[in-house]
Length: 216
Image 1 (cartoon, rainbow, N blue to C red):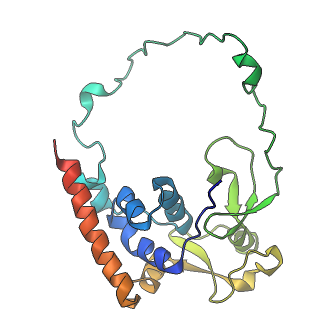
Image 2 (cartoon, rainbow, N blue to C red):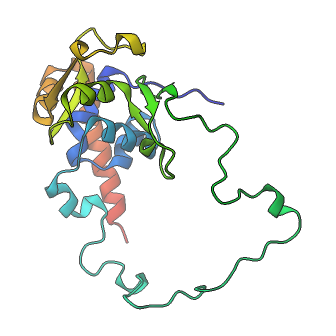
């Protein structure tokens, strides 16, 4: 099984600077990662798309009447409503039963290190994406001492204090910064020349992808 590649600080800097006004699939190509990996990292950092980008054609969202003919309308009945899927042969023996969990399911309170190199703890067994069941320990520690994180802010390690050892993740090793402050810390003007060139190439790549998306 291929090991997940941790995010470098330079990649995080570019993501923080570019995510709000760039297509996620373009960033995935730039970083050589999957779409889900980029989206998951952006969620962890508290990044969001700008309103201007979401309203633009580059976002790829369904605005106006785009795709109207293929949408379900209010009150429309799906063709398979009420039908049951037939189970044949021995396939039923390998199906998960209601409320049955996989054998490799970890108990609540378990720890793991994420692909991004952060220690996480399992906080729920609810179905859905993994981020609904796992939460970064440094955020849990901060919230336990200070309450919920202020809207528009993220919890980060103080310089030189990042760790995956649960005993080292203490409140004094953490701080909260606003997204604006996080952006200022990672602005392209503070990056080395080779990374500035990478950002420029990303812009070229994004424009090429947008041009292809606009083709009929």
